[in-house]
Amino acid sequence: MSAAQMRVLLVGNGGREHALALALSRTAEVWCTRPNPGIAALARAVDVAPLDVAGIVEFARSARPDLVVVGPEAPLCAGLADELLAAGVAVLGPRQAAARIEGSKIFAKALMDEARIPTAGWTVVQSPADALEWARGRAAPPVVKADGLMAGKGVIVPDTVDEVPAAVEGLLPAGPVLLEDRLIGPEVSVIGLCDGRDVLALPSARDHKRIYDGDKGPNTGGMGAISPAPGVDDALVEVIRRTVLVPALAALAARGTPFVGFLYAGVMLTPQGPRVLEFNCRLGDPEAQVLLARLRGDVARLFLDAANGQLAGSSLDVDPRAAACVVLAAPGYPGVTSLGGEISGLWAGDAVGAQVLHAGTRRGADGAVETAGGRVLGVTALGHDVAAAVSAAYRRVEGVRFPGMQFRKDIGATAH
Image 1 (tube, rainbow, N blue to C red):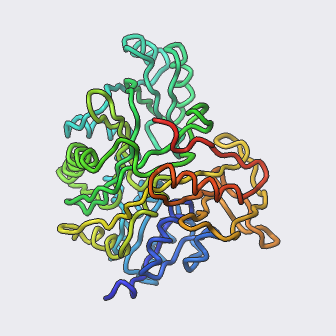
Image 2: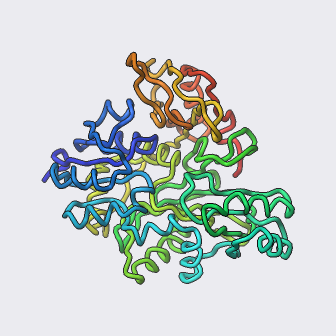
Image 3: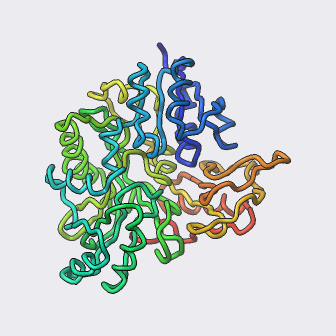
């Protein structure tokens, strides 16, 4: 079977999946679950919701794609990969037991300790009083995290110890709360493509989590990204691959839950060395938008090899240029957002090396593209270095408009 004959079912319909569709469609026929208007230009629509595990499996049984690529974490944590594999369909994405590395932050911390992966000190609390007692014994106010999936918004960084109980109380309805010692340093995302035994590290990336310039305001799912991360060379990426990704992969395999798919490590570069902040069981977003823009070659074949446990001897074909992504968000994000605003400038002719990736968009009643989510678009560009890529992305941003559009104006300029 040649790569051109491959048929790939893509699960998900956000910015990450638009980036995946662009990469996969170079050599494969792509189908996508309820694609947004941007993905619909590249893929055949499948009228099944991305979170409908039974519906996706039923479609896969009938259509028999050569590979299913799962973008979001929720269907993976719900067991989609298990069900597809039981149906005899190849899937790039971990089984439910391995996806717990994102589905439960407490599970991930225990795994890190077991595998001797460097991370922050931590504890689990189930009351504000217990949280305050632990926090008062630390050198700085701890980071407060929900245990389960929170769409990138389950992390609170209190400024003072006195703010910790309220932060914990707000997250307790979702279950136990994790407290972690605060780490200091720039953050970097290193993501490995895994086949259960072997792992290829993608280039480094840096996400911008806070909503406002200067890293102010509440955390979001990500307001932009750059790749490579400044100060992170290939040698440091290899250190993180060897000391973080490889031990995590080995620990999961030893538990009888080998990890297949994208293993995301959020890492703080502290004076004492790299320390893991979190693991995710999928590509980050917007990191996926800059990383996939830099991946060349037959991505569909590479992903199929990973799904089939055949990465040994493989390598990545990486564009030496840098990439930057600026996220355009709806008014009110990351809180209650106002949706339905018409978007203009989408098809104005992208500058060389720049592209507009759809995240939260839909077709309105009149056929126009309108806002349908908190993060609406990701404008991604390549350049000879990060500064050039950022400049190209912002030039393209100037041509896009929708009511209440908000975006950070300092992507690539901050250290964290």
